[in-house]
Image 1 (tube, rainbow, N blue to C red):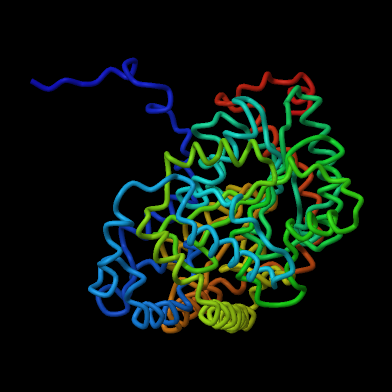
Image 2 (tube, rainbow, N blue to C red; image 1 turned 45 degrees about the horizontal axis):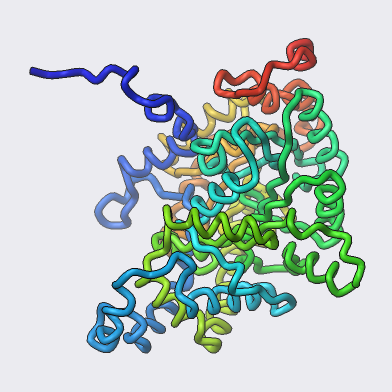
Length: 486
């Protein structure tokens, strides 16, 4: 006898779609999984360019592991430490691990600032770190402001289990998608008008998907704004070691240090928090090393208790602690990482440029480019962008991610990852793009025509915000102001 489970017996989370997988971002991954490219076994398969993974310096890591077998408790050289690592470990984390990660975070930022190991809190990757911070800072129905475009996984990481909402701050190409203070202020005031309690602002610096960084003055102004309005500032800095060109990267920790050293102490440090991981900077997403670093003692205490739901394994802590304690290795790795990212970025954007495809020029960080295909759209709409994306997935056989999946308000932008493949695969991908552009060259609109069409964005500008407010999953009452505008 076959029994069908009644959905009424399950939770709303189990039967809902709050995870956010109904997105072209995740659909692209599924297309790759069903037909993955291999240079010999499946040369016509889909090339994965939707994965922000850093594989350019694995040779450096492999060399270190061979020279330091005692760093693993699963080798003859390291087995003597097996018992001490395998038995119960406090969720504060191994001291060597916390000390090494704190030192590494300082080194990544040019040793311009130091981090307190006692404020290092473990989490299961940046995903777990973000959710932990959301649980600590906001209650269900309360919101965080987020500049667009932003990483699609935030809809899952910050919202799904916490009930916290994300309110977009719309940024556009006219300003290279840089966050402007007037846009931040407008989004905050609009949220208040709609009875949304904003608890904080989430920044990704360097940006995913833009590959840009925030300058010091902008960070100071943002910190002043969040401080004056008594809301939290959460800085996702997981790409901080991927900066490969000028200007230099500035961390929020440097703004905090600057405020302390000035003696003014105008910033309320209880409102400032950093999310970090080794997934992008070191290329270790499978090790699930996420970090919450907060200047707020209560948040540190609560996050540490919550970390028992997503600890980094003691074996991983042991190995990472050993590796990052090797100052010579860290120096060599960071230098090679910057150089190889710069070289790959130049090779890839150069290849695109030769067929008339431009990318966001202000990009100097990250594992991806923000590619401008607006000239290939039949019309300036999300529907036209989606249609183009389907052609790229199904015919060109490249998994790139459309801007709409990143909540971008301007159709035609795509995130393309370049650091998760070897040189040969990159050349194959560029060859496919060249063939595609050659086939559709006559349909490409002149760049000046795009400027004339910029007014089309006005009709699109409130769409993301309205979709958030009008969503049946949103606990926020529908404002008469929003209803009137739509």
